[in-house]
Image (tube, rainbow, N blue to C red; front, side, top):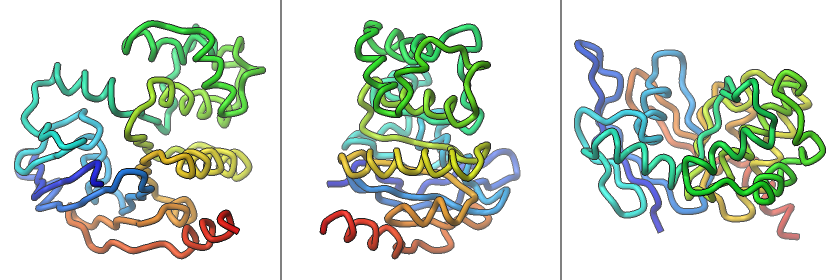
Length: 231
């Protein structure tokens, strides 16, 4: 079943063609990586998929619904209800604890539930740090709070923008292991990354160049990993 379809998507800013005739399908439960050099259209594509921007032309079909021409208010509701966003810069509220940062996402979706928020932190190995402020957490721990926040409302799509970009190798491995677990549980994941090693863990990699899809490749590392876990 297709969760996301981009049909002839283009995005133009003045004379700049940021995206040109993008066609892409993402199946439910798939893990996809989006790569490309600076200026290739990665951020624009992420913003459109994440309901933070609208295409100039084409259709975005999410969960069977064409969201391309929805109002900004409706897109905010769709993003809140269906998409879990993970950012490179974390975007945590610095005067709130890890637990409270997760509960903020609940507040905008429904009702804060401390027990649920603590369980989300436990899923990323941070239950013991629930009472700490962002300034008291390492970069890797802050990213894991960001992941817990993205998961708290049970999104149908997890969209991560350079999730390991500010992390050292050890913390990068921790974050990727969390993504592997989420994928094994059936989550649909799209990761925008410049790191080929991060992309290798996805099932497919979409390479963008000059606003177009240059190629889509399947990843052997993902196949090997799935085979190993099926033994």
